[in-house]
Length: 305
Length: 258
Image (cartoon, rainbow over all chains, first blue to last red; front, side):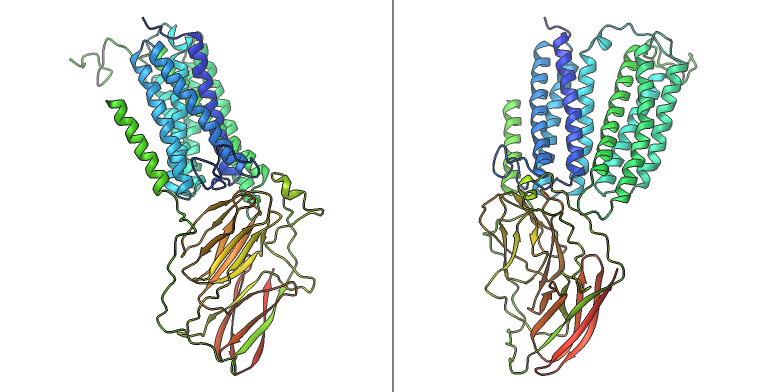
C-alpha cells in the first residue's frame, strides 16, 4: 500500500522547489547581463556540453546547467511520487511538472535559435513562474502542514481562502506584466498600476489574517505577515529597478547596480508568489467552506439539489 | 502505447527544432546577390573627382566611460591602461573618429560591382576592430577572431537577415554577405556586452570612415551633384550637397555638436 508521503519525499520536493527558485534567479541574471544570445547554439554550448565559462557564457550556460539539474530533480520527484504517493492527483501533478519543465526547456531553446522572439521570451518567463508554483505545490502537498491538519469551516464572506486565492492570482498577473515589460512587449504603466492592485490584495490578506483568523492559525498568520513584508520590499525594489535602469541608460555595458536590483526584484516576486500560493493552499485545506450546503446566496433556503 | 507516442512526439519536436531552427543560415549557404537592373558602367578615370574633408566636434567633450572586463581575464590582461567606450572618440585636433561618410544620393542608376576582397571585422582584445566598417552589397564580409577567447557575432539589421554565430578561439574566419543596402547595422558580441561595431552596407564603393585626424576621402567619383551624409552613432547624421566637376577635388567639412 502506498504511503501518503515520507519525510524524505517532502524534503526532496522542497529541494526541487528551492532549485527552481534558484533557476528563476539565474534566468533573471541572464536577462540582466544581456547574455541571452551569448551562446548561439542549443542544446550544446559552443558545440560542447561544457564550454569555457567566461564572459556572459557563464550566465547563459550556467542557467542551462541549473535548468538541467531542475529537470533531473523534477523527474526523480515525479518517479518517486508515482511509486510512493497514494493520492492520484498528487502523482499526476508530478507528471505535469515533468511536462512543464520539458516545455520550458524547449521554449528556452527556441528563444536562442530564433534570436529572442518576444512572445516566446514572455512565455518562457511566465511558464517559469507557473512551474515554480507546481514545485511549491508539491512541497506543500507532501508535507506535514497539509497532511496532519484538522480543517475548520470558514463560511464568512469574504472567506480568507478566497482573498488568498485572489492575491495569488493578482501576483501572477503582475509577473506576466513584469515579463512583458522586461522583454519590451508592454510599457511600464500596466506593471506599475497593477503593482498597486497587488499591494492592496496583499494588505487585505494580511489584515484579514491578523484580525479575523484565530490565533491557532499560526502558519497562515505568519506567512501572511511575511507576504506583507515582501510586498513592501518588492515595491522598493521595483522603484530601484526603474531608477537604476534610468541612470545607467546609454552605458556601454549593463551596470552591476541595475543587474542586482532587477534580479532581486524578480526573485522577490517569485518568493511573494510562492508564499501567497502556500497561504492559498493551506487556507483551502484548513479553512474550507461548509460542505453541507452550497447555495447561490447566503440564504439557506436556496440550495443545490 | 501512450508513452511511446509521447516519446515519439518529443523526438520529432526536438529534431524539428534542431534541424530547422535558428535565424541563422550556415555561412556556406549562398546568398544571391541582387541582379543589377542596368549594366555596371565603369567610372571614367579621366573625369573622376573626389570629395575629401574632416568631421569636427563642437562643444564639451563627453566624459570617458571606462569599460570593465573582469568577466574576461584573457582580454583584461592585455590592457595596461584603463580602456574606455569607443562610442565617442575625439581626436587631439577636436575631430571625430569613426564617422561613416558616404554618398547618399546623386549616383543615379549607376551600378558598381562589389570588390573581390572581403571587408574585414576582427575581434582582438575583446574589441571589434574597426569600430565602424563599410561594405558593398554582395561583397564578402569576413569576421575574424584574433582572441584567445570565444565570441559571438550578432548583427542586428532592419533590412538584412539577422544572424548570430559563435566563434571559439582559433576558429576559421566567418564569411557572410549583406544583400540590402543599410546604414547602419549594429553588431554585438553578447558574450562581451561592451563590444559594439557598426556596418554600413551600400550599393556603391563611395564611403569612408574618419581616421585619427577626423579625415575622410571619397575617391573616383563621377562628376555630378551629390548628397554626402556623415553618420555618427551618438550624434546622428548631417547631410551636405556638393557638386564635383571633372577631375575636381572638393573639400567639405562636417560638424557635430556635443
